[in-house]
Image 1: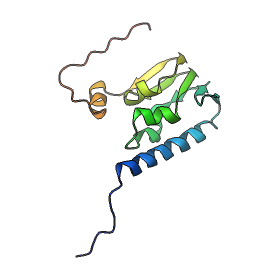
Image 2: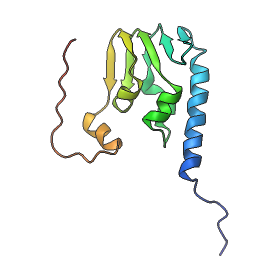
Image 3: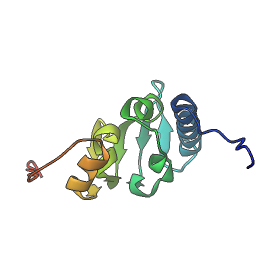
Image 4: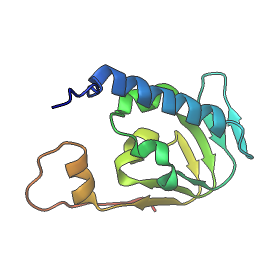
Length: 127
C-alpha cells in the first residue's frame, strides 16, 4: 500500500492562509470606486456595500480578531448588507443608509460555535 505523502494543514497554517486572504482582499477593496482608506487603516465607503457576497468571509479559520486586524469600516454612506455571522465584526462606526442583515439567526449562532437551545428573540428599535 502506498504511503500518503500529504499531511493535513496545522491550525497555524490555516490561520496564515486566512490572514493572507484578508490582506489581499483589503488591498483590492481599497481600489474600488467610492472607497477611501483612512490613516488608521479603516475604510470609509460612499457607495452600496454588500459584504454578504464577499467570498473571503467564507474562508475557514477566520475569527473576529483576525478580521478586525485587517478590515474595519469607519463610515459607510449607502446601503450596508452583511450576513448575520459578520454583522458584529464588520459593522461600521457610522452608517448613513439602510442596514440589510441576511441570514437565519438560529443557524448563525450555531455556526459561531454556540450550543443553542430554545427560542431566539431579536428586538430592534430606533428605526
